Image (cartoon, rainbow, N blue to C red; front, side):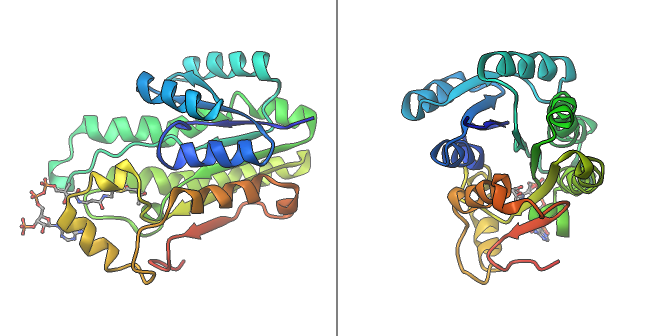
Length: 240
Ligand code: CAA
């Protein structure tokens, strides 16, 4: 029987590529989104992938949403915590709201997404937890104290879950994408973006599909002994 995968923020950017790659690999996929109904409807029309709307920053909404997905599609075997936002500002200009919004979505959102799914994975003796972190969680980034903190925190979550889940057949791994050609990166001022691309040895931004292929690998049985790892997919911009 096809395994079921949940991809948060799965209708746009890297998340959309992940949803499609998992569908193509034979998974039954549920893609969540937070607000853009139009993009979600277009995504379902084009891909046939079901979409579900909730705010990953809210525990009760996440739990209820996940319950709905599981009653429609069956137990979730693979969870990809991908939903993320930026609220970039130099630290001296960063507001408490900008700090909190990013913490709620990118860090607490991972807890809210994985926590309701985790007991079922433990009971069934199988699970794949894949968290989309970032190069900027590894190296920090000017104007991203909030974002970098969450993405570094995501790596801490993964390393802890890797230890807790191992005896129950669950692996937890992270991917740290570098700068990928998505709306999020295209929102960076052109001059700044050009200076970033100049730091990437491959001389280009990554493609969302290049991250999606990392996800399908980590989700597969081939990756059974990979646990607590981080795949850095950044074109050589930063080595850990
Ligand atoms: N390093 C050093 N200095 C930098 C800098 C950098 N990377 N970026 C900007 N600066 C400097 C500017 O040159 C400017 O200096 P001066 O005041 O001397 O001219 C100053 O910082 C910027 O000051 P401003 O008051 O004009 O800044 P602002 O309030 O308008 O904010 C910004 C501008 C938000 C920092 C904007 O430059 C920006 O968006 N930078 C990109 C941040 C970034 O890389 N975000 C990543 C988004 S993609 C992502 O997050 C996905 C992922 O996982 C990789």
